[in-house]
Image (tube, rainbow, N blue to C red):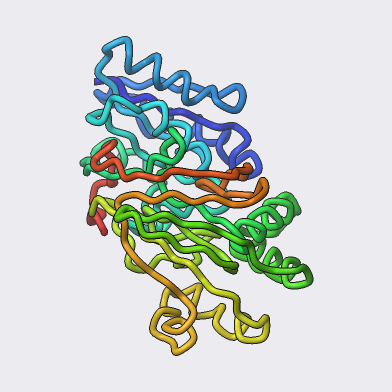
Length: 305
């Protein structure tokens, strides 16, 4: 088997490129056959993975990048659910690996190569795989601002997210959204935010979907009704730790359910953040794809949720 390391040289303000030497140092002199592929532009990782899988080669992929790079690679695996992929988190958010452990647990090359894989679900949203989460409304607008803050020196993922929150508080809040559930029932109203989640974390460590599991065949949908700014500020610490559902405000203002599919429409083009990457939409159809790919859990680390 060939072990292919896919490196995004721009990830983590250039940290990804530094992994070349680390990989070579860890695997030179071992019996493992490996190669390194450096991505050239957006979409290149997805193309490379798909072409490699179509060639019939027996491979394992390891993404040296952030959640966006991982999103690309998993989309390249579409149609090849038995192919294994690992993640060496080099981004600023690194939210997917938080479902299993800490970032440092994923940075040892030999532990990755010797790790075992587990099946993971994805959400198929308008034909694209969502590996971790899609955010709409306040969450997404915060992510857009956080992306700007992350470009500044010495600003980490969590700090950038908090700065994004503070920036958005000064603006009008809420979006009108129309939902159709799997059973045909509908719901329309003005909401502060909506999360459609496969994993639990977003924004560099905020546990917005505390009951999510990567292999239960269901997406966790969290819809927050309009809340006064003062109360929302008060609940933010519990939103970060994933305990907000236990508060009186959470019980009153948050609809949290599990579904296998849904549809969502908005009146005008609206930002959506998918695995950390921001675009716009007016309509989306989301449906679970169970066991869509196999994720490598480093040796010595439990499989997690």
